[in-house]
Structures are given as C-alpha cells and as structure tokens.
Image 1: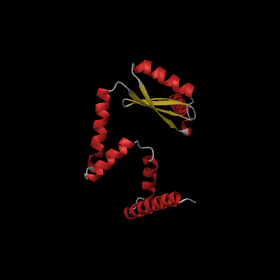
Image 2: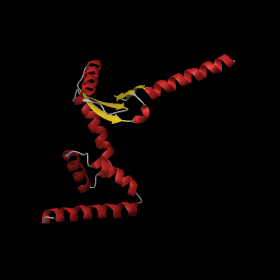
Image 3: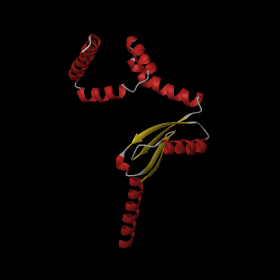
Image 4: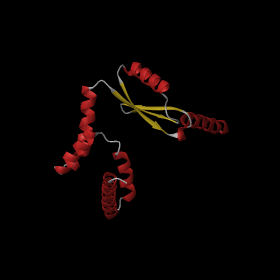
Length: 157
C-alpha cells in the first residue's frame, strides 16, 4: 500500500471518528448518517457557502437563504423544477418525453428531479410549483376503493 493511500485512510478514519463522537454526544448517530449520505451529493458551491456560513456562525440563516434562493430563482430563471416519482428509474427516452411534455405544458425549461418509490406500483407523480399531480397506480386503486366503498354505503341506505 502506498504512503498516500495510507495517509488518505488515516484522514478518512479521523473524520469518521470525529463525526461519530460528535453525533453520539448529541444523540444523533442515525440522523447524522442520513445527512452525511445526502451531503456527498452537494455541489462545491453549496459546500463553500455552508463553510462560509459556519465560519461566520450564521447556520441559523440556512432556512432563510434556502427560501430566498428559491424565491430569486423563481423570479430570475424561467426553468421550472419538477419532481417526478415513478416506481422504477426512468430511461433516457421517457425522461426526454416527460421533460418535453411538461416543458410544453408550462411553457418553460424543465429541471427534472427524479425519485423512485416502488410503493406507487406504477404510473407517475409530478410535483411542481406547490402542486401535486398523482397518476400513480396506487392512487388510482385507492380512488377505485373509495368509490366502491361509497357505492356500498349508498346501496345500504
């Protein structure tokens, strides 16, 4: 094993142990693990901004910065963020078709955030601009169940 590899492994272990000790002291081991797994997806600019906020002891402003970021983005950028939930990962063809269809519907460029949730069984859930459009199989089955239940209640009256 090279010296660089050993040095890197020592750094990883040091950071990991420090994180575990701090999380254990605060009673947040599992919560911090989940946050850490999400943190690895952060872009360099997000990490730099968080570092600057931490250095200035401004972590209490994170929610305000997030809210203002979203507000400014909505007013300054014509791109719409759309969260799409499907039961299986999208392939390139379906991803392109969804972006094209929603782009025409909203007359804007679409930034697609993809989520996979096998519990919806099939179909699609689209969330954007504070609205939710649920065309999942689970929602359709629930709707059918509710209608059948209502019909049974009405026929018993």
